[in-house]
Amino acid sequence: SAESSAQDAVRAASPVERAIPSIDRAAAPLRFVWRTDAEGRFSALSPEFAELVGKPAADVIGRRFRDVAATF
Image (spheres, rainbow, N blue to C red):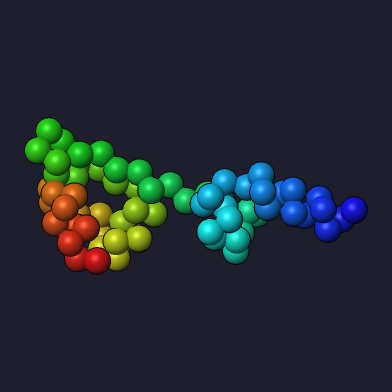
């Protein structure tokens, strides 16, 4: 039945998919990509990551991950 198929799909979903059922699967994927140097300072990041942290990339480059994360 359609109901049991839906229940099977929910059981097969990953824990993240079950926790966030409203993900728009048709939307373009976001790329939260960054690179840090040996001291943990940002040396590069994707525009999507900069938008997530709410700062221009230039304001994040050179700062430590923990310092940027502390602003949340």
